[in-house]
Length: 314
Ligand SMILES: [Mg+2]
Image (cartoon, rainbow, N blue to C red; front, side):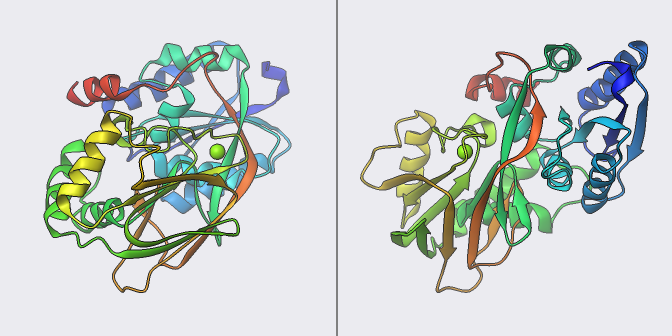
């Protein structure tokens, strides 16, 4: 890409974030301006506004590229707004977890953004879609959705990792493991108590490899069901997932497919999409293959558990 191709739409969520993210937003913009690119900044007012800004940018023939800065929620709305567009997007991770950015190989360095921009490596990203509600990374049903609901219910402004501690603790002691019915493509896969994860990325919070075979551009959704009826069993699942030996066990179901249906006969069972509260059950998730073109660092790999923990601890 060169400055004559068009302007760069620079979409910034001013509320997201750690200070390292804000530095990257400023430094990368300075770099682009120094290279004589026409950078046009828009500040988001809400998540849906982020999507509208992206939609407007990709429908403007003068725009050559989108840069989006924010957490997983902002990035999800931006890529949803760009769905089907030819022009690519580069993301600046500014949230708490940055699940998608981590999966694409970004870290907290401006030099990585510049490497991605100069490297010209573009990869397609699939989206999960439940009747217009999208996710880029992961949808959860049961335990983690309860945690997200508790965090959001007590949220005041920007959240950090510590804001998850008490919600996880309370959910661990109060969760009752609802009954789910899970269908993938035409297979009735599971009926029983447990935790259900559907997604597109191989590393979840703090780098947990729940969907270890997931590839964000392979045209498939990955599904993992942990059969679970009790706290000791949940502790065992967690430990085996940390050790990356959960898949292949009799009480863990792992599949890939294009359409996944999750329902429950119970009330008060929640979903989460990319760390935000998701739609009410029943939910049918369909894959939108190659929905957006992502600029990624060449040869980069997602950070693992150790690197993620080191970053959290600062
Ligand atoms: Mg996939």
